[in-house]
Length: 230
Ligand SMILES: NC(=O)c1ccc[n+]([C@@H]2O[C@H](COP(=O)([O-])OP(=O)(O)OC[C@H]3O[C@@H](n4cnc5c(N)ncnc54)[C@H](OP(=O)(O)O)[C@@H]3O)[C@@H](O)[C@H]2O)c1
Image (tube, rainbow, N blue to C red; front, side, top):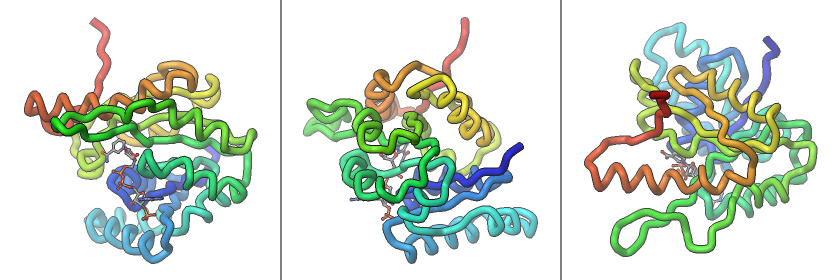
């Protein structure tokens, strides 16, 4: 298996931290990125202290997980996962675009979530697919997918034995789905399901709001999607 470098921009939030921790258990190098090198270092130290229960685990994490800036992530990583707030994603990626090394996979995990006055969550009015907007900004040699929007980050970070969730993926082509699914399948309990082209990414981006409402209205903790065949 070819070793690769996986990087997270906005890796210091709940989702970035959870993905970084689980991906760093595998053989690949994982770059946890931030706008601030110091914040990335503090986040990686937190992961070491919270998750390094044994000498072997802490050894693996220390070898594979590195703090860096978002700029270094896009310069160095073969796979870039954007775990940044929806409303900041376009500006952040536009600023980083000149630094992408090219021929990379870019996965957007950003979800369109806005809290209404009545406490319900929904996608902001007039929201178009963020992933399609990012596709327009990114270099042509970078392949783009949307994924991870329905994964509850804090539950994933806990790493419970029975954790299981489906990761819905929209991608610009089948090969991009296959590469995204390889990343998803490195995390125990996650299964990638292809929903289709990037034209469908807005549907995935709005699912987080639906899940948040399901959780609140029905008293379900950390709801996620699991698709079953009956
Ligand atoms: N949390 C979940 O359970 C979950 C689940 C599925 C999908 N998502 C989606 O995944 C994304 C990340 O979620 P999260 O909960 O981890 O988010 P978050 O904690 O709100 O933000 C993640 C990181 O984004 C960076 N950031 C914050 N403001 C920024 C700005 N103005 N410009 C550029 N970067 C900024 C920060 O990193 P630095 O300050 O270190 O740069 C922050 O730690 C969101 O789009 C969310 O909708 C979240």
